Amino acid sequence: ANLLDLVDASARPGGIVATLDPHASMDRRSVRDYCERRRLGPQDTRKLLTWAVASERCLRFEAHELRALLGAAGLASIELERRMAGLVWFARGRKPAGP
Image 1 (cartoon, helix red, strand yellow):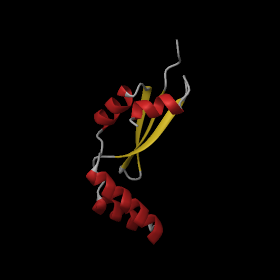
Image 2: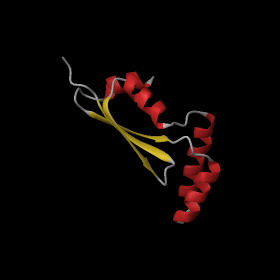
Image 3: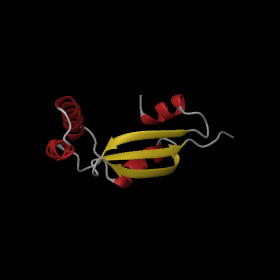
Image 4: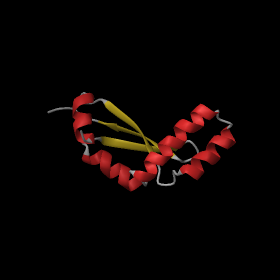
């Protein structure tokens, strides 16, 4: 399934869709540094490092790329915020109301 299919299936018209996506700067080293600074435990560190490895192999986003992807999925009023010391995007968009 692609993002458009997920938005169509899971969000009602007028509803909000929120995502958490890796920023272009996310990699194993930056995540490891983040975990050390935050004194995260081994289990949380392992989970975040796994996400970093996956993001290095797939997609990491600059603002314009993520905004375009969410817009192509039919979302409007898109808001992007960087979280976790800038390593991830918290994105929100509204599925337009039906006709």
